[in-house]
Length: 226
Image (cartoon, rainbow, N blue to C red; front, side, top):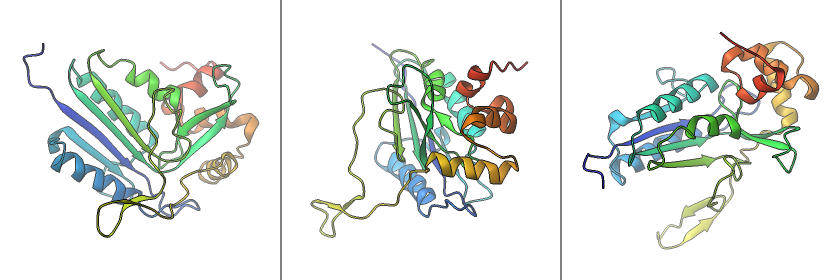
C-alpha cells in the first residue's frame, strides 16, 4: 500500500499544421478541451500539465523533438502509483517497414507539426521505462492509432458528440486525420528542400532531424550520435 500522495501528470498535444497543405482546423481546440477536462473532472493540477499547440506562437511548439523530450521527462518523474496521461490530436500516418513484427508491413506513427514522425516503437522506448505500478493512458485522436503501442485499445466512434438534449451520442461528420505516406513524402520534400521518396525516407528523416529523428529510422541506418 502506498502512503504518499500520488501525482497525476499530463502532456496534451494539438497539431493544426498552420500554413501547410494538410492544415487541420480543430486540433488545438481539442487540446484545450482535454486540458479543461483533466483539470475540472479528473483534478489534474495545472503545474503538472503541459499543452503543446502550433496555433499559438507563445506555446511550446509540438515538434517531434519537443514531444519526445517532454514525455521522457514526465516518465522520469513518475513514481509507482502515479498517473501519466498523453493526448495527441493531429495527423496519423503509416510508413512501410520491413520489421517482421509489423504483420501489415507498416509502422503506425503520429505526425508532429514539423513532420518529424514518431512511430509506435519510439513511444514504447519511452513509456517502457515507467514503473510497473504506474498508470499510463494515451489518447490518440488521429488515424492509424489503433495499434500504435501494440496494446489493449478501446476505440471511440468517429465524430461522436453529445446530442442537443445531451442524452445520447450523435454520429456526425469527422475530419480526416490521416496523412497518407505519399503526402508525408511530399511535405518532407517541401520543408527540407530535398527530394524524399520511399527508398530514402529513413535517410531523409535522419538527415533532416539528426538525433531527434525516429529511433527506428536511426537504428535501420546504423546511425550513432555522441
